[in-house]
Structure formats: structure tokens, C-alpha cells
Length: 446
Image (cartoon, rainbow, N blue to C red; front, top):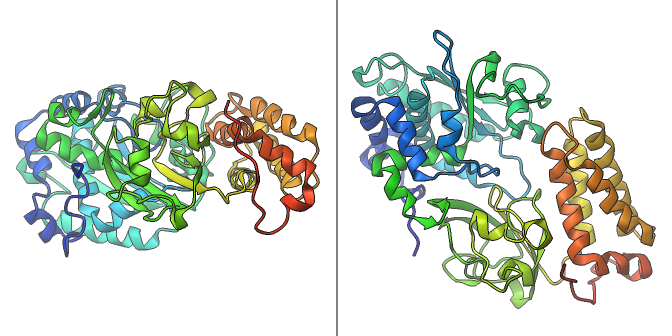
């Protein structure tokens, strides 16, 4: 049984209240940081831990913090990205709804480390029930003296606010989030300048994911070196995985990074195998924006080594034979899944959610959706398959933000690994479009 650093007490009755959370060791990191550590020492512990951003990019958190500009007399901000929008990802809302004080504790300790005296939690607008839970918990923290003026007599002040967004996927991109937080349309900004120099209100800002910030109390309490002992190589600590699709036990699992993918899918400790005794066909390992992999490549690398739930192992082989851990949105697909239909469904989402600011993304996502629609509904041509790859290549690397890549990568990977299924939709349109039709062939490995 793997260690649970974030979710150890998640099922304790009343853990969402200050009193119960405090009895189970809550807010110790705030006391330790404010009473015995300097802000730079907190940053150093996070660096030692090797914690990488849990929102998808996997960039080292401590290094990101160290980039924050600190001009004299200029306010700084910490913004928590709680705009969880990636299809297949639903871990952050559970942390916020069941352990709201863990996130608040992380916000206080992290804000102290960064010298921020005003911080924000930007939450997806549809999660109104979570917003109310957070606001209640914040009020309890203020009442207990952990927020507001002169916290614990340390001389450190912090105000914390929750801000609901409008439910736009694009606001998961940090600069679009900052635009929305300022009351503007959520369009990503050109970079540089980066948020660490000019972020919220053109002031130095750090934007971190919910899970990243929730890990900070553990790191401060136990020490960065202890946290770094968990995991494999540069993939340290634990990771929350949102497991869904054709699994016997879908849900949210906290794993120690380094668990073999095969164990995660088939062991009773985790997902318990594929439902109805069917065969696994493919997996999207890190949310809908990462490349899909067929069974043969998600369980083992191209070199035949067991694929691990780590940033490095999943990306082994690049996008030819690998994928990404991403946000941990693990979607398993059984042998009855239509890859063409699934890819079209993803493309519909990205076309709808594009802000339209960049023409390659605005026009390209529309073309991907249209061509996939043609193929899925029996009107496709063989040249459409290569057209999908061509459009994806013209989107990739030519947009202000990563939404273009998020739309392009799944399509390119689906064609790369399942081209024969796309061709079957062209050569057998009546059979392929029949409700419940199952592709009779096998995936073609790259």
C-alpha cells in the first residue's frame, strides 16, 4: 500500500472543518514556517523536494518560485489555479471539497515564502458548491488567526480570496486566468513578460495548481529531502490520478510516482482491471490533451521496459511511442471503443474552447472537428487522414498558448497508432457508422 501524503485523512468525519483538521495536525506548516523559517528557507525546502507542477506541465515548483521578481515596494501575488477543466481530470475538486483547509494551509505557507500579502484561488465557475466550502473554511481560518493581520504574532499579513471564473477551459492557461481575474476576457497573453515579472495587475505573480500548493504543507513539515525520497528519479512524491473510462474501479487515487502502469490498471489496490472482462485497447494517460497510446505501448516502452507512472517513463520515446503524465487524467478504453469517434469528441471540445485569438488554433481546431466528423459519419476520403496530420502540424507551435498543441497532439497520435481504424471508416462507411460497431482489426504500432 503506497503512502498517502495528501489524502491520509480525507475520509475522517468533519475533516472539512477547522477544528477537526487542526486536531489531525492541520496548520503545523504555517506555525513552523512563520515561527522558525525565513521565506527563502521555505523556498529552498520546496526546491529540495523536487515537487513538480501537478497541473500538467510538470515544471519544478521551487524553481518557478525562485523566478519571482522582488522589486522593492511592489506587491506580489500567489494565485491558485483551481480552474480544473481538462476532460478526464477531476482530482482538484475532491481536494477542495473534502480537504479545504489543506489548500488554505498551503496557500498561507506558500504566500509567506513568496512574500505575497494578497492571494487568490481562481475556481471554475461551475463548482459553486466547492466555492462555498472554501469560503466557509477561509472564514474559519480568519477567525482562528491564521489569516488576516499579524498571523500568529509573526508580523506577516495575508488576505485570501476565492474568485469564480466563467467556466472557460482557456482560463486554465495561467495568463488567460490572470486576464479573467482582472475582469477581462480570458485571452492568453503574449510572453514575455512572464507572470513572475508582470502577472496579476502587472505585478510579480506565481500561479500554481491546487495539488501543487496542497503538497507544500507536507514538504515543510517533513522536509524537502524526505519528500524527495518518495518516487523515482526526478518524479518525486505522490500524485493524484483521476481514473475513469472502462475500469472496474474508476476514481481518484493517490499513488507514489513510479507505480507500473500495468499495476495501476489491473491491481485491486487501484483500478481493478478492465470492466466486463474485456481487453484494454488504449489509454489517455494525462488528460485529453496528451497523446493516446495503444495497449502495447502504454504497458511497456518501445524498448520493452515496464512503463511507469512517472513524468520520464510515460514520455519515453517522445510522441512517437510515448505520451505525458499531464494532469493525471487517466482514461482507459476497452476493445469496443471507436478511436475515430473518441478523437472527434475531443476535437469538438477544443474547437469549442479555443478563444479564437490565434488563427492557426481558431481555424485549425475547426478543420480537425470537420474532417473527423466526415470520417466518423461515413463521408470521409483516404486523403482526409493525411489532412488531419497536416492540419495538426500547422497548429502545433504556432499559437500563443498550449491549447493548439492540446488539440493537435491527440489527433496526430490517434492517426499514428490507429491509422487502420481510420482507413476502415473510409472503406467500410456503412459498417463503421452502425451503432455499436467495433473495429475488427488491431492497432498498428508506430
